[in-house]
Amino acid sequence: MPSIDAGVSILSKSMEEQKLIVQMLTDTVAALKNNDAAREALQKVEEVTEELSGTLGTVIDRTI
Image: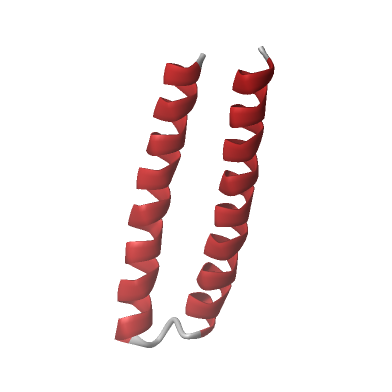
């Protein structure tokens, strides 16, 4: 089904972009690892990443 394939493709691209953003944030925070605020920011990024991964999986499951 073309519409499902297109939707999954868009979601996959979005997830790849999110992974890149998370990697950049992780690298930045790692450089500031002795900073308490940076550690808190990294924890929040990790929480959001887990939430987004779960959301993407749910959307794909419902689409299929």
